[in-house]
Image (tube, rainbow, N blue to C red; front, side):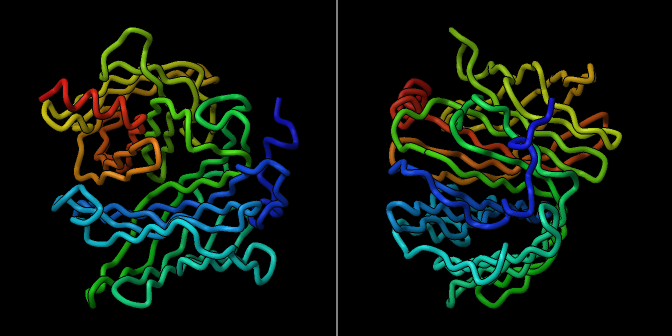
Length: 314
């Protein structure tokens, strides 16, 4: 049964009043892709109001490198000033990002300007209403967290080159306590098209290797109907030397009894390091019901486990 806290309202486009938890964190994330050039990218901001800082920025990867210093663009700040909300849902971040609500919960104008090499002027138009992560589900069991796929259109400018964007991508919004220690392995994987949205949260099967994972949360939009995932399995193929994802097979069942089967191959990736974890973001080309669909995988590992996997492979 849906409750008030399961519904994303117009007020949730604005900054939230933080609790008294030191680690209270609010995030804005929008992704974008240019699949025919294997380009993936994020606009991301993380706000810790009780600490008084904003982190995040923008990054863009392709098939030419995986480390931050080898990417077409990478800018990830740690402790800038807090953002300004100029009117309800209109937020300006010190990173150079701004978010302006066009239609609450559904459409947004996005800008990122680093005042040097990179500028993004994009529009996100949602394909479904924001979908809540079930209360208590990892990786954010104590936070409010909403996911939504959409169509992203607009332009990028990088070192004077104009790049057109017309893709399907994912965004999320979250607020609540978030900690830098205690990360566990999690896979955040999505695919999006006009007819399909697919998001899975996965964790390793007990006693399994790095390839077998249980789908414990997420949702599917098919035939205009959104359903929460109740069970599923994901089998990941990894590079034998580097450990990162090269492809995967997925089978899930949702609350309406529908089964979705999909396969994906990697197009490009980047390594995004955190304080105690590492996230490998991989652009994917899916095949769902025989049709090509674009998407992404975020493969999050505690740093010590990622090191162990790679050393064992080598």
